[in-house]
Image (cartoon, rainbow, N blue to C red; front, side, top):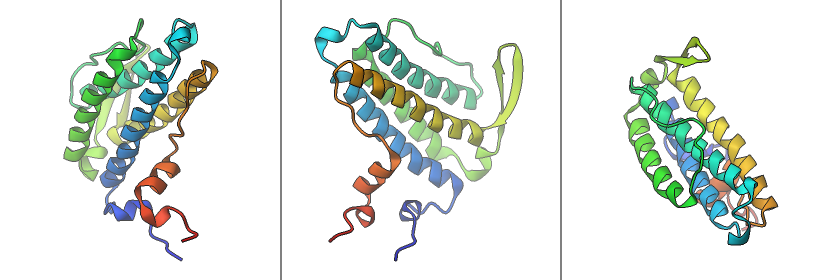
Length: 180
């Protein structure tokens, strides 16, 4: 019985290598989320639930955009909860944001993951390390993609499974069909 994890395939002996691996899944899941949004029939796109699904997708992009800026010592650049989001802007926005994140993660090391950042929210300042916030962003995306999937389903669109395990099975033949 094999005991090697999917992370070992990528040489994930370091912590940052694990985050790079998980971010590859994140990019794939975001792409699938955008496909789900595109699948919503035109005749129901005026429904408030579609607007909410678009806002949630834009919120995911905004969080990634803003934390990329914050990690690099700059101010947040996007409204956290954008209003009036248009579906045709999301593909380009995600592509640009994901390119920036890939470059950023490629430059990080295990040591830089432990660096602290200061976050301001509701009149309070918090200190947290980069790793904690990167991990938060992963879980945050799962949460909101689940909401988007539910809304897409309610609107008659086609949902796609974005689970990590399905991505690993599809991308690593060692974990595919075990009957062969």
